[in-house]
Amino acid sequence: MYIIGGTASRSVAEDLASILNCKIVNTISKRFPDGELYVRILDGISNKDVVIVQTTYPDPNIIELFLLQNAAIEAGAKTITVVIPYYGYARQDTKFQDGEAISAKALAGLISLNADKVITVDPHKEHILNFFSTPAYSCSAVSEIAKYLIEKEIDMILAPDKGAVERAKKASEIINCEVDYMEKTRKDGTTVEIKPKNLDAKNKNVAIIDDIISTGGTMSLSIKELKKQGAKKIFVACTHGLFAGDAIKKLSTAGCEEIISTDTIISDFSKVKIAPVIADVLLIK
Ligand code: R5P
Image (cartoon, rainbow, N blue to C red; front, side):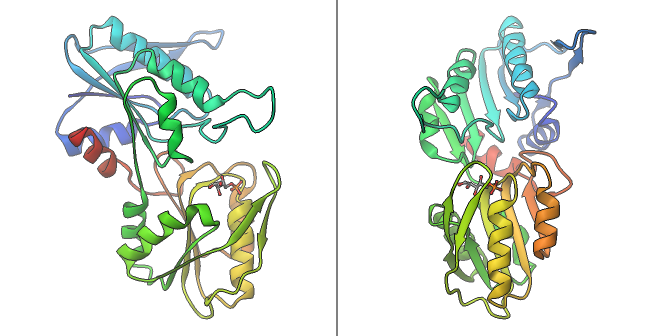
């Protein structure tokens, strides 16, 4: 297996190569004076099984993925597996209003054109896997996040909404602690409402786990509610840390003890490595 890392996911690609004991393919990725992207695969991959690792966020990384897929085809790769640590555009997974694009479907269609298999991590909704016309699989970061949280003496795992409760349950089983969820209603892309709910959080260390932190609105409201209910330390953890705008400030101001995310999107908060769970899927699928 030969592994190519796009610029958004080079370290994940390197971790995968080290876990699976396979070769990292050397590439060049640079911009023409007008800003257009140029990629070149430097090593021979003819007739090889190739894995391209690239998060599709922000937008320029999508173009890079398409170019790398094309370069791999042109270089004679036998098979192409596309690993997308964070599948950007996955949240627009249906037509919420007439006339909208189903962005997750549009992107999946294009990625499938030059792929034999796709693997992604904690997609917002699993049904987006059906948008790919190739076999597509997901894996979850929750076990790795839970392993990181074990040493934080967590008493309770909290899901910020009912939809996220399965993920929270899985983490609580690994940590061996309580689990609960909050009642969240999304008003629009930037506004959420968290209904007060009696949680047994007094003097407890609580970790709130979600798939994505974007504006930080969901997490900061949850932190405030937990504070009101007397929680001791509050940790927020997510698979995909987008941290849009002043998300980090919001979380700190709300009184968060620590912000934790994986490296599906690289940031200062990427404390949990995602490669081990992706490697497992690559080995069995
Ligand atoms: C939505 O249902 C997701 O699971 C996250 O809760 C959401 O994307 C977080 O967004 P924000 O940080 O903007 O509240």
